Length: 294
Image (cartoon, rainbow, N blue to C red; front, side, top):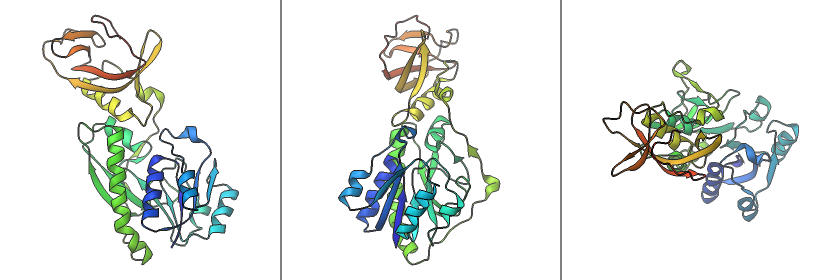
């Protein structure tokens, strides 16, 4: 079975290498010329060169140029992993066995944008690793394989990304033989149970110290690397918080949110709407002196 892979991020790259290790016949790779669109962008050119796989960059996956290039490779199937634009009907119709996409959420719930970020920011205790057939709508096609992935309170964007990646590798090894034999079992999504997560903006990453410390902790771990980081503004300067800890302590109800307080054993902490935050890693560095208001 001849495969083309579409992707632009670390996840795409790692699954490409996994497919190569499974001796899958990769006829070509399509990646992006807009690298700045992906915070976790990964350059797949060296892997393609090493394995004699043709690679092409594009800013428009639905262009005539790309359709022509795909047709020239005569693929049986296309994998689309880590791509932030919808694929239109013309391209979807090219491979005989369709286009398989991936979404790191328990669809039909939580379709849409930034699923890893929203799952952590909302404090969810589980998500899922899901392969499905693409149609013209976001994350709506028939499910091929779905595995639940637990989220611990210690997980952040980086660790959850890795959990999902390792789960996805196992899934591909499981279902790919059934694709070769045309025996893949699918499940239709019940869209009555569906919701659609929106695209996040810069203001979604702004720390408001009036929030609970748990909500702020969730926001920080959701946006840490490979993403852009949660931030706050102090004296008209932006500070990005990469790692923090939520601490609960009684007897501080009369302290205003945003004030730096010194707690014996913990040192300087920031009072929140409820609880406190200890910043462990931020950039640029800022001396948090007791009594200062952020």
